Image (cartoon, rainbow, N blue to C red; front, side, top):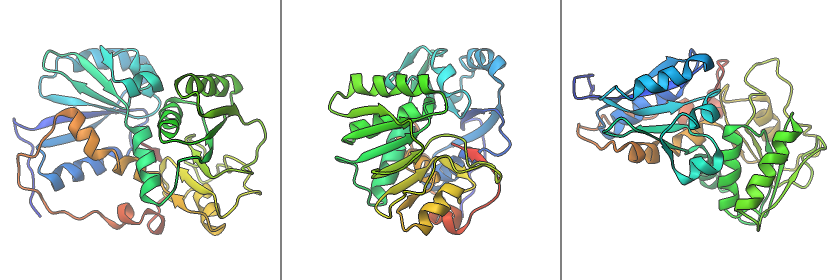
Length: 295
């Protein structure tokens, strides 16, 4: 395995989160960079909400900074602190990837939604004409909702603890994709659902309840959870026992690594390491842990 030392040529990719101790994105992205021969390193930064504006302002002067990755709870707030946003980030109202341009300006992108859609399709889930139940209405949920609508789902139901946010999300998707039937799901049921996606943090802790009543869950329903640790959330465990296709959260991250590197303008300049992915990435449900993090 080839080691890639950090030198004065290495581009830095900061990763903002709070808390940060259990984030997994830096580990996965650093391995991806080594595998591809990209001279870049990901460094996690614990940044509180009250300090986010100051941290973003400081990043403008870091000339070897390739960009910033963004994890909860900052994806929505940080979008308003940037100089420009891609169309996907504008529609989501949130950014999870930021590129620092040579003049210090910051461009926000959004790859959560496309990453999740790609992960579902890689597991054989058909989205065209599908009926989807989306749990949550935050920054990740909006990105996922827009990507699902763009992928051709016919019906999107949003269920969220705060009904007003669910209504706002359903209306927003409907404006951009009028062919998609959007509504707020009031009842706690998964009946008549082809695809169930959890974008909430419910499931990160062992004591968490299920995010929705699964009594009506059908084996024909595909179930995805954006939580990456534990890989085996209660939701995915129940879905697997019910015979459903399950898509663990790490696949949302894995399927946005390449597009993220392209967005950041990072190209291979070193010898690829040839480092294989560990079992918990190739088969995360067979190698679950007790740590907790959402990408």
